[in-house]
Image (cartoon, rainbow, N blue to C red; front, side, top):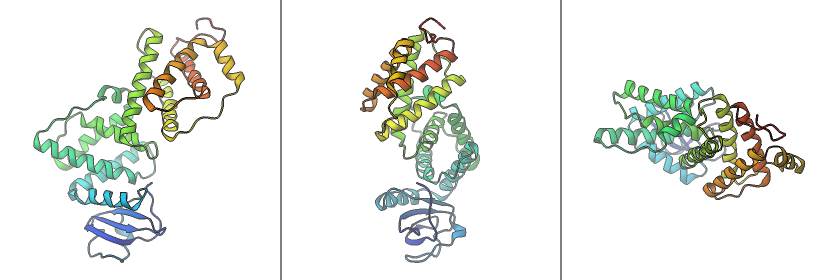
Length: 296
């Protein structure tokens, strides 16, 4: 969550730029902004003109951890992280992503330390992220350029992937970076099953693949939250079994893969909806059978 309510009463001043406060609903929030903590003390009301970001964690303990994290980051790095988040919001045409500031600032701080020490890390899923999330990858690359421009440090190209994963994470409420990595690996596994079924690689940059990924990402969100789609009518499931057996076979393989990866069983309705999207994907790429079972 990333919205504050009304006035902010200081609980603790971490430094001139980071303050732990209570909002109008008595929630612990983390406030950042240049000079927002200057001259402040516990119990005083913050100047709203100096409030730039309001982060509302799930509870007071997490608010304290977030405030400690941000307070340990140099002001120029925090300002750069704030610029990164603002650029992301503008590019994606989305509301302010205040909750993104903490992970981006922390990651940027650690990346700069690694660069200064000459430490290299292996970044998994570079190819997968580049192909599955081209827009976020482009923004990750633009982030590296912004860091170079503002801080004079050239981060390794692989860091663009790390920032891209943070951008993907914030697109789904309460999604963690670990869950984003799991989602990315699941997409890779699913496309592997699709490629095996087709007998050749699918163009993952195409519009059909992008739509397929969008549907799967919402499925992953439901899996993570333990929710299922509404029951598919038995008539629909029977029609899929009879008319699109190849799509159903592939959908069952995908369901089995997801159950293993996510530890959550998929219902027959989920599998039916996957089959519908599989059929559409194959139809749009010229590989789907007709509803009567003949080759398309």
